[in-house]
Amino acid sequence: MPLEVHDLSVRFGDTVAVSLATFELAPGEVLAVVGPSGSGKSTLLRAIAGLELYTGSVRWGGQDLAAVPTHQRGFALMFQEGQLFTHLDVAANVAYGMRDRRTDAATARSAELLDLVGLHGFEKRRVTELSGGEQQRVALARALAASPRMLLLDEPLSSLDRELRERLALDLRQILTDTHTPAIMVTHDQDEAAVVADRVAVMDKGRILQLGTMTQLREHPASDRVARFLGSA
Ligand code: ADP
Image (cartoon, rainbow, N blue to C red; front, side, top):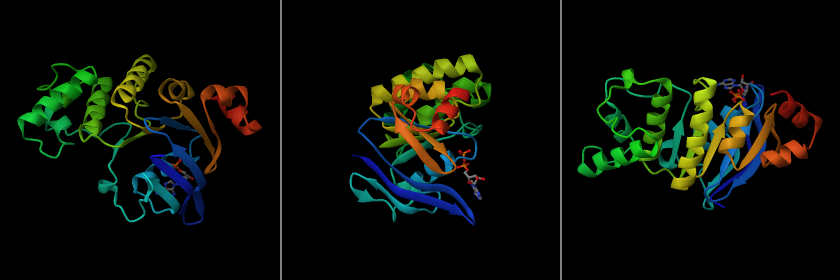
């Protein structure tokens, strides 16, 4: 398995934000992490990225990443909003994720990535002239620019209105499939999870209560808490 997370825990003082999380990700697999606010979803993602201190282990291809800093883990992060450079145009924002960003190859790759995210011809546009949905598409193109071995997405569509979110969720699924990029996506929206992810982990109070396909979770919830969350959310 590419990613193996074993007994991962994160504490903030007396708060146990994540408790003994264990799961694996198959090649190209997309996992959604759902659960109520404060259940530890973002902290789990940030720990895998190397942004939080944790106990337990995160392995990639069998290698323990304990001593590997965030920027060397080969993962790309994408958040809800506010991550584009407003003084750069769209192409420069996308190329920012690349090693040799001023070469012809980088220019060609920017154009290719913009095609992929549905923004053909947007290279010279100013970021400030884009809609929220377009900005998130640029952020996704930039996250993919470095050809990450995994994408970590924290509520990537949450700032968008419902209709746009549904459309982008479908596109996101297609893009992850086309690029065969494994991903973990935190979301509070279980419909979005069902569209984008192969499997879903339900978290509550720092623990993964159940992990399976959305169909498995809905038809065979392992506990009342899982059933209640999926029923109410
Ligand atoms: P979620 O993403 O599911 O909303 P979080 O991972 O953000 O949940 O938070 C999990 C728990 O950890 C919460 O109780 C939150 O208050 C706490 N927490 C998160 N980040 C910090 C931090 N930097 N310092 C202290 N407590 C934190």
